[in-house]
Length: 182
Image (tube, rainbow, N blue to C red; front, side, top):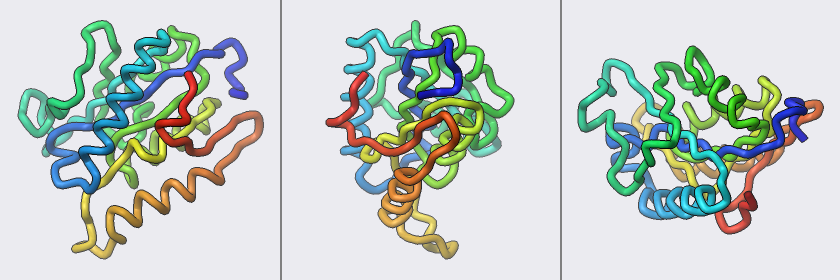
């Protein structure tokens, strides 16, 4: 029940599943399989698939680290949003792309759970979107050396945390790949 009343459609966001972002992430093969399942189902249903690609001093455009993992294939007809901030809406054309497709509901997948995925979920919700995290289609790197919880704990906590989010006139929450309905 988005607050963007004239935008009844859904989009699938695939955030930053780039070589330099997901290398060594736990459960990556399963996450990639789930994202591929969702991409295939979205395409079949005519739901826009929007790809987001981070760039900064470590993820330089044109480098192998910046490239999307080879297991995921974007169609030339699918939007690719270049970003430089964790929130995929911040200083990008994402809002324009979603508005052009009449999108008011987001299904979010990708990396990294505790940074760009979570920032984009919040960014969408505060901008009036329904924002749903696909609980088994996101991952993050191991930052335990810096005092962070294990990646598995970060993923589990984010799923728990987002399953209890809400805002006036908007829905949030989590869903498993098998339960996604386009």
